[in-house]
Image (cartoon, rainbow, N blue to C red):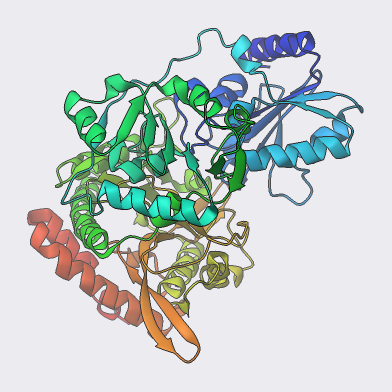
Length: 602
């Protein structure tokens, strides 16, 4: 067993004994229920050694187990190998959920501990029901991990800036007015927002407390006549503080949110989102009536307005031009330079940094050669990475944060000779991506219902992929955004429906463990398509602008309509990117956007 993990598990079990706790549950979570966590709340990684972005660790006095989804199974198996922690492949029909596992491992009247300050209200209910049914006690008052994590990192000390025109296309007052209108419909006096992206959007602010996501640590309490922003004041300039004050926004210390909630008048009604508010924070205000609903900002920010959409189109051109520059370098360097997966990340970020409006990557670049690409969320490190040489497929999933939008794109390119099986898999994934790109569907359709468009061609090979086909994407905001999720595994809710203005990824894949992985991804915009006696219909506009490598295609597998779509897409890419590139980048663009029949000599 890893000595560091063993020592930490021993320490946790000692604290569990002191508190008479039989099982400690450590989710991947923080007080804002973020996807990417500040170091202070990366306790699950610190304790287990598993570095994936999703997972739940459960520790009893004699067993420890970690649940993670199929994106991370290979990675988790390697990282947990010497820890004594059992890997639980979440999503596998034979694997129990953490709640079922705990019920099966603990005696009646045992105590299960979870830190309520990082536990969503809806998750708390699931654990509460499971524990009650099994005769167990759920304890949420203590942070047991904090008692042994003596060198725990402090809070991030980033900066907060205003997102201003022409990039900000909605006034702060407009956002608050729309939120208050929904509060009124719900009969709420107050609305608590802890989700960092909802706060940043509501106030037209951006930050850098969390890598890749332009957000900042804060809570927001909105009343009908006042707004309270709980944030470290030193992150804001005097000018920005003055601007917020003029808009009626009171800035208070980050750690004062609980006291503010506890001081609200008894009997008043608080609107909160059970998926984006922790039970620990909510419990400090028992005097309030509670109303649950999805944060109004969550849905409002998912529907981009026309000005935002136009900025995103321009951003996609800048991003596409950067990718032309990168791929031109990559192809010219093959056989002349030693290229590693780490070099891919460095060069693609440098190319983006030269484009107008670029701020940062939108997530850690995934550059995965051959078998590494079979792990959907693989990340190369200085200690473990591949040299790109020989024959095979290179998968590159990357994105950028720009003042005028957020990008996310995956391309797979051949190096040397590739096998017929690789072309078959690549073409099946491409067919699925094209099918979803061409889809016409009713407005308000549950997003998960679109999943079969993209999976169909992959299913035809008796294959599948474990991740979703599409996630929402923010506007200079988080690269993963709701409420829509194109995945048959997604939980349906009243707002997870496709509406005009939503930007969503389109990214089917196919992964052969130990061999290769393929994913092709564009971002698409839901647009009004037609209205008939059957209602309103939507279709997708493809936003991403970058050639799809046709050297990997088995052309016989494509229909006439699919070939026409691909040629039309490449015409659009060439037309819009040509004015922004020159030299080798333009030559590469011209070469990679030739008509399919001409390129493959059909």
